[in-house]
Length: 229
Image (cartoon, rainbow, N blue to C red):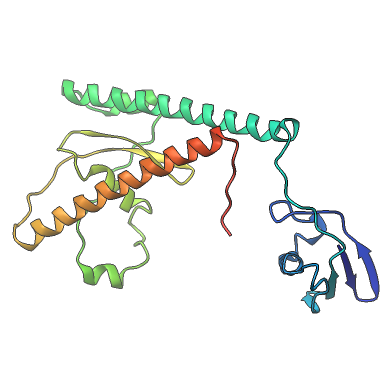
């Protein structure tokens, strides 16, 4: 691959979409233009960047091939490490959730168990599992006093009874274990129908999550890596 910038021509080393040329990282449009070239059309139109233009010429294409065991080894090791880390974290937080359940069943306050486990307690203001459609369209952004992961919290407590403890739920780089303090009864009629629809949606979401987790584990076990795009 050759890149002509201003009046100088520079030959680039081989690079891929997954591992772009480091010298082009500040100008992703140049890399994108490079992958539009072909043997039939090896020259690009001028690509403007902050301090000039690039005109690209395709010098050659290396056809994809399966990785050798030695080439794949770092990815395999990294995948195994990540998998083991997830397993350790999952085991640890499951133990914490079980400790909270046992404390709740004994009728003892949860504060001591929460502190012993090193968890950060947070009490949320009352909320409704089923919001009115008008509110959904008007309030697209979370309110200032509203937890950013409130939708996930709603999903976690949807099937809990007062005093029960949820499983650990990953949320971003962290996660939470929810304890349902109390639940107000529904007024009936439309509210009951909305709750039934809400619970069905939660079950459908959980089925999809289980499937995607299973698929991810199978991909990692096979040494495959899929990227969006």
